[in-house]
Each structure stands twice: as structure tokens, then as C-alpha cells.
Amino acid sequence: MSTPPPVPSAAVTDEGRCPCLSGETYGNCCGRFHSGTAAAPTAEALMRSRYSAFATGNVPYLLATWHPDHRPATLELDPGIEWRRLDILSTSGGGPLDTTGTVEFRAYYRQDGQRGTQQELSSFIRKQGQWLYVDGR
Image (cartoon, rainbow, N blue to C red; front, side, top):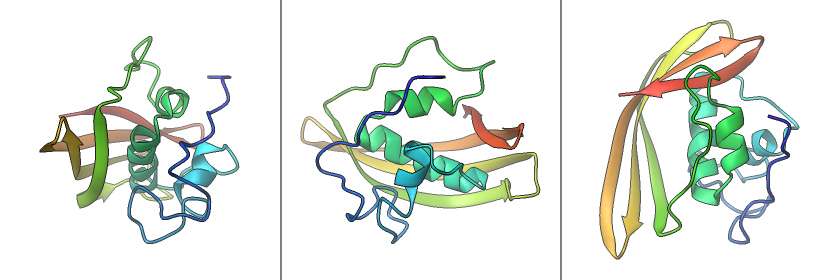
């Protein structure tokens, strides 16, 4: 994808807390992946950055980090969903020297005043040195 990522929403600044709740600032965590100044070194880092992309509405980043064999042609995010928290439940593989990995997560959100969760076991593959999201179940 050659489309540059958008500027994060006004609620997220480089100095603010990263939406993935890593404990880092956005600029030192997912923001550097979103801006293209660094690539996620692990499957978990990519998972966190994709969660943050959902939280900030960064559709170009989501599409660019989706494996081309599984990527949808377009992606529309529901503006009524507010992503609140990410819990990483487990990881398998996905390290700096691996070529595949999985990350199980639970994401918490609010929509129309109601709380909800999404739990998924996501699969990742590293292709030409870049981690890509394959699919989830």
C-alpha cells in the first residue's frame, strides 16, 4: 500500500499514552509503526499496533499490515465503537527470528453506551522481514 497513514486522531498525541496500553507513549510505541519510521519486530507488536490503528481510525495501516491473500479490498470502521482496552492473553512464536506466530487477545469497547468484548486468536506471518496479519478465529 502506498497510501501514507493518516495523522492519529486528536485524542492521541506522540506524548500521550498508547492506546494498546503497553505503558509507553504513543510516539515510542505504536505511533512509530503507524508513521512508517519502524516496522513491528514481533507478531505481538504488530497486534498491538493494529489494535491502536483500530482505536485511532488508521485504515491505511490496517490494510497495509494485512496479508495480501486475506486482505479485504476496502475496510470501513464503525465510528460508534470506542476501543477501551487490550489484553494480550497468550502468544506462540512470532518472535524476531520466527516466520509465523499467533497472538490471542481480548479487546474491550463501548458502542451506543454498551460494553462489549472481542476475543480472537490471530495468526501472523513474516514476509520479506515484515509481520503481516493473516486471519483470526
